[in-house]
Amino acid sequence: MSTEWIQTIAEIRQRLEPFRSSHQVIGLVPTMGSLHAGHECLIRQARREADCLVVSIFVNPLQFGPQEDYTRYPRTPETDLNVCRRLDVDLIFAPEAEELYPTPPLTSVEVTPLSDRLCGPNRPGHFRGVATVVSKLFNIIQPHRAYFGEKDAQQLTIIQRMVFDLNMPVTVVAVPTVREADGLAVSSRNQYLSQGQRDSAPILYRALQAAQQAMADGVVDGKEVQKRALAVLQEDADVKVEYLEVVDPSELQPVERITGPVRVAGAIRIGSTRLIDNLLCD
Ligand code: AMP
Image (cartoon, rainbow, N blue to C red; front, side, top):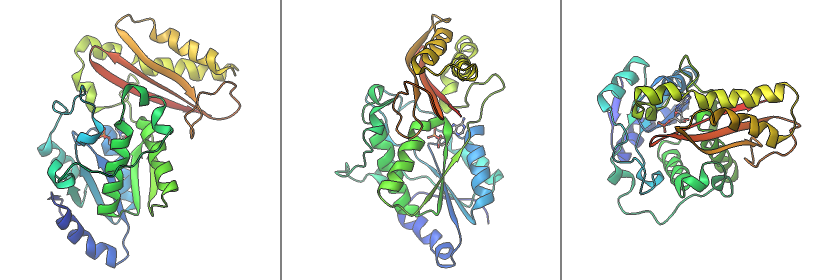
């Protein structure tokens, strides 16, 4: 089957019908397009596990704040189509904003207080926008399996919790973060960085590694682990720290005394570019 580019809800439902009625497994990889090696990893895993593979490409206005990069977010439909063809994707669902939001929605999905932690204070409304659009995509596509990257760990945790709380009949699959050779997590926003900024960017991963190392060395005080990671970030005066926290992986609450797995998560700004990353430490 060749890759089909579909823009309407009616058509994607119609295309999925034969797969559904013959009990085939439908897999969904939700993306905002501008596909890169991170997305490819999700798509490859989904391709192995689904009979019918749908990649959605939608830059969701609901999840961008008024001062954020909605209009300048990279859009590369032709390259995305080629990536999907190469990876044997069956259907691309790429609606226009008017198709998903013919009128401003009065209904939204909010997973509080998970949405208020980590990135929450700096991106008010962001996770409401994410949870709402993912709910809509789940209702439209009705996938059996949906794939999300650990790179966006708070998003992943929120989706997992939403699916659990609302009994959505979908298995959420977490895919490990894909990194550049120097450790920088691959992201569509990396292309905003100048060469000098790109050289600085792996500092976030180094800070997370310093936290991981501290725990490996036996540090059990969450604040001390956080301090060691922050010390790395403070080495570069051009890096602005939004947060760097050691949290419980499912509640996203800061951990005072580390006795089990924790997630170390951070967000920094280099110039006007915001980068996030995290490591799950057992
Ligand atoms: P986005 O297009 O940025 O909304 O990302 C779509 C999906 O790809 C999300 O589930 C992300 O977590 C995932 N993703 C983005 N970058 C990476 C990466 N470097 N490694 C793994 N997954 C990623």
